[in-house]
Image 1: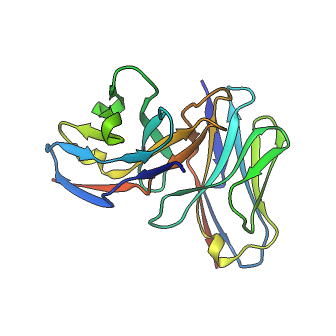
Image 2: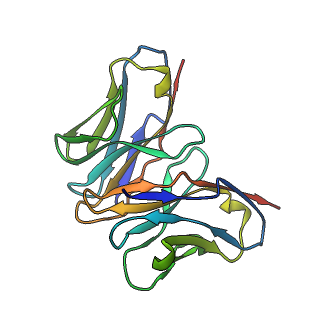
Length: 113
Length: 113
């Protein structure tokens, strides 16, 4: 069966520090991969999605970037964190063909001090 | 443009009472529709999906949803709510372009004993 792993579960970082959040998927090949942010009391905002290695689409301009160095690995990064980057970050995957349900990881709670 | 509206931000019901969470969508073609549930500090779990066919869809945890094209709605229902159903519920519509999901803002459900 397929599983998705996100780490770390929680992270506290100072303003201006770098960020790297990692997401890996097991049990499937060539998944579509997604990064979402959920601010407190808000819905989900799609940040990036990827349909293959090295293929990244950005949904909103921001201080973050994403990379997909391997088929089942998706990384969210920042060179310098801002206070506004605080939130709950969720990674998700879906099967690559057609419209399929997305399956979510357990999320990373990021607090910027 | 595609959109999803969940008119109720918060709903409180008594344990054992019936539940209906509203979802209205805007989409140009036949929609693919989803309901997800999120417990505090967790990722999203798929409750059910509608792609085609029978407009009454059964999901996990005793939930069901009914697709009504004439009303552009996909309301989630449960005949008898349990305290463990307290969570946030998200409705989503699928974008066929890249299997992107467009989420509503969510409805937070509280259950009174």
